[in-house]
Image 1 (cartoon, rainbow, N blue to C red):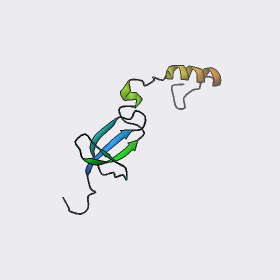
Image 2: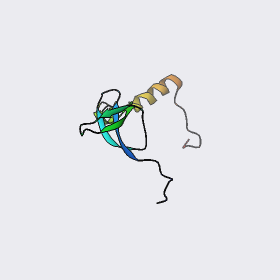
Image 3: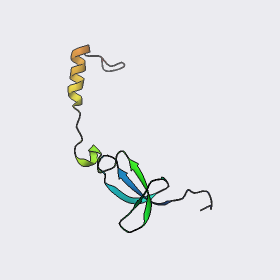
Image 4: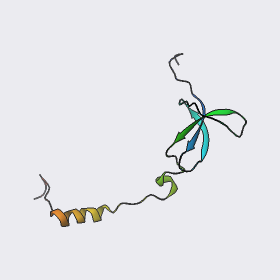
Length: 88
C-alpha cells in the first residue's frame, strides 16, 4: 500500500437517533462530539438517522405493497392500455 494516501481509519461510536442504541465500530468519519465507552476509552460519537436497530427491514415492520391492487386501480381509473410492440 502507498503511504500517505489513505484516510485515518479509527474506532468510532455510532448512535441511532431514533432508538438511542450505540455501537462501537471503525470508520474514517470524525466528529467533534465524544463519548466514553464501556472500556474506559473516549471515542468520537456520530449520530445517524437509521441503523439496523430502527430500519423497518431489519425490525420486521416493513410493509408489503399491494402492487396488483395498484395496477387494478390504475386500470379502473384510466382504462386498460395496450403495450407498444406487444402481442396485439
